[in-house]
Image 1 (tube, rainbow, N blue to C red):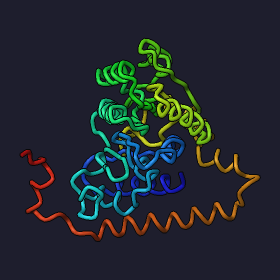
Image 2 (tube, rainbow, N blue to C red):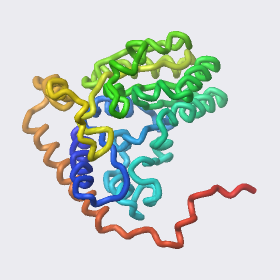
Image 3 (cartoon, rainbow, N blue to C red):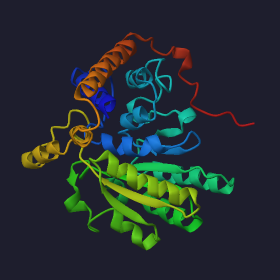
Length: 306
């Protein structure tokens, strides 16, 4: 979680300095969700992410310099600089990709889960999405299909209380995302998304269900994004008292409090110092890396078909 926070803090600085082109979406505040789910994935599992994907990639141990390089569009990026911030992907680590389209990852993760079931394997797939995704047809189609075919997929909603700039209290008529799975017969649970241990426990149960052949599940993790919908968003739609309260629920602070009697404070401080140096080195390397050659403009765009 510390590594994600430090990386995303630097991303915000990069955005403010206008060092890179395009939109940047940071993950600060939501670290407990990625770190509660992704470390439980096996090497043969899969997951899809969103345009807010840096935290997922870091939790999957994709090197920081490869993520930073991708954000800068450089050859050292995990996709050779062709995906950019919203499309970080590394299929060698099971990260199918970050999706620029809301709800776009759910059908893809469901397909990966169907393949696992068809091949008789016990691997699982995870689809991360935000609360705004429930208004997309793809969300409903994926849940319906997954339930109908018993796909071993876990849908993880990172409910950060805003669908872009629209508050969840306004747009979520069902009251919760978890409540919306009932028509599909999919078990669901709502958890404290600022508590990494709560997210981990819910994920363990969902993964066990999927690996045992009991079909899909949904986890709704209640969390909060400290940044805006995108870097540069002035966030005038967020009440100051709400922001202040969620800051008291910071997942990094909650973790420190939870392990205070088990881990030494100096050791935790040392980790933060070490991580800060990693992040500086990653972004420096990205800045200094070469741009892709113009001759590569049309490569990796289409897959040849025999």
